[in-house]
Length: 204
Image (cartoon, rainbow, N blue to C red; front, side, top):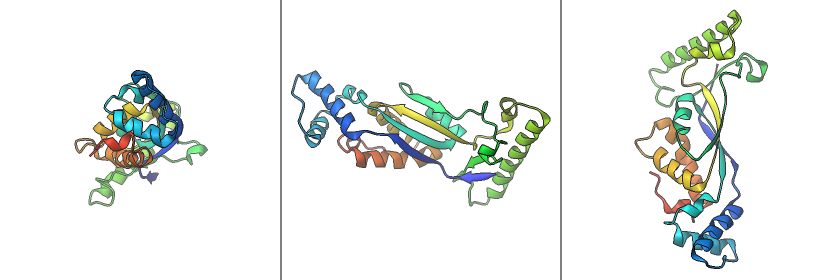
């Protein structure tokens, strides 16, 4: 059994290209010439940011490593492309998984008084999963015993307008604490990388 932290990795972000495409969208709407430099395009966007539709002429792809429960919340967002690790096809007893199951650390349990109980539950789930495979079940049959804390990779692609909506909902204090653990630092990074777009919003 292996325990890891939730994480994210930005796989695709072309700031200059996306800023130009967004700015072109605004310029078409207002029939104005395209500003010549990246800095002037950012300023133009900042002035018109309340008009959100041109933000759809962009794309960012992020790879999250989160637990199954959080992944199921994430896929509820529309207008978004997803590719997700499949427990039907992944056989965690194979060498490419180091013959072990990886789980996401639960900050509500890890290093707390309940941690031993939590870890024992994960060990039992891993043992049952491998026993089911040894008995002859397929991965899609054996997966029934796998808990929500199973580590899951999910690749998410969508435009900046949708990312803003995702950050608004998933960084909010009402969001699940494990969702906030990845969305808060990601939104902060985007506010730093593209302040003309994401810096106009408070995602707390």
